[in-house]
Amino acid sequence: MNDLVQKVAYRTRYFDDPRDVLAQILAKTVVPYQVEVQPGRIKGRELCWMPCSYCYGGSSQNVGERLSPERYLDIIRQTGSGPHGGIKKAIYAGYATDPLNYEHIDDLIAASAQMEQVIGVHSKLLRISDRLIATLAAAKVRPESYVTISVDAGSQQSYNDTHSIKSKANIYAKVLTNIKRLSDMRRANGASLDLSANYLITRVNNDSKIIETGVRDLIAAGIDTIRLSFPQVPRGQDSEGDSLIPTRAEIADIYKRLKPVIDSFAGERAQVIMLDVDSDHGISARRTLPCFARFIYPAISYDGFLSHCSQSAAPHFRDMALGNLQTRDFWDSFYDYDPADFWNMLDRQHTKMTKNDCRCDRKEHTVNQVFKRAFGTERPV
Image (tube, rainbow, N blue to C red):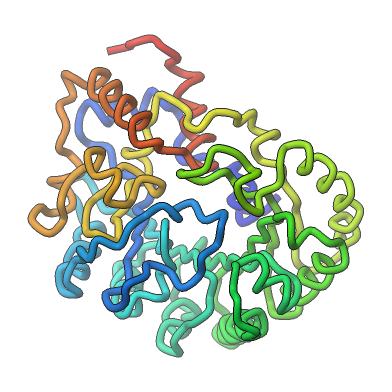
């Protein structure tokens, strides 16, 4: 597998030895593998324009709190230079919204590019400016930079059904056009930008013909890797039956039916993979503990707080937040913990996670599993 496939299959190793990471945490020299930036649009009542029933952040509220554009730029620049080194990778995504819906997203990503951070963007790609395309597809963009597009459809109707869109707008065609704009600029500049697409399989978009058409459309638009997988049950829901999310029994049937379709793309330029991640990684609980996510990939949430992780980057997790970036700088917030009280601090956070119904996403599950295997319930310090 190439690096991009390793990444989308949740097989990337963020560190070599968890005990080395623990030693750095206790010495307060640990630097996150990445920071996730989740800017929220300043104008408007809604955090997102799509009411997707399987959205991880669907229970989030728009409390109206935002960093000013100037403060946001200041914080982004702080991430690139810390007391023990800057963060090498900046991910622009959204727990409850889309980063490209933020009015000043071009400025933030340009700042990361100027600091030569590896850039990752997770978006539905309904919109993207010419300036941002030029930034992401520049010849000097750092290797391993990527854009991942959530498509989840293979036709106009399946796109609208999957995303609970009531209008007849052909958003699917618009997304494909934007992918091609990025791909064409990348090719013209010889940029090392990777383009991947996610297809979350639901109860309304799992028809074999729809998926085959969708994969061919994505390949024609210039996508390098396509990952088909199944949504997780988001916070605020207790079972798959509450939404479009297939049950475990349905997943087994869908996987078996679609596997020949996916295998038929084996000779294509793009790599097409289908994953049942929860089964492959033994994920059955809502969270994997002990949770070390805040030291590996903290997140800047849309309300201006430095959050524990990408999945707790919202106001209803505020008692887990590392600091208010309106008033505190990034590294002051990140290193605000007592190493002598480390394991008790984790236990307190775990209690809050249960109270807040915090749920790991799959990268957090798989990374925390490494720490669980290394430490279990022992207290090695």
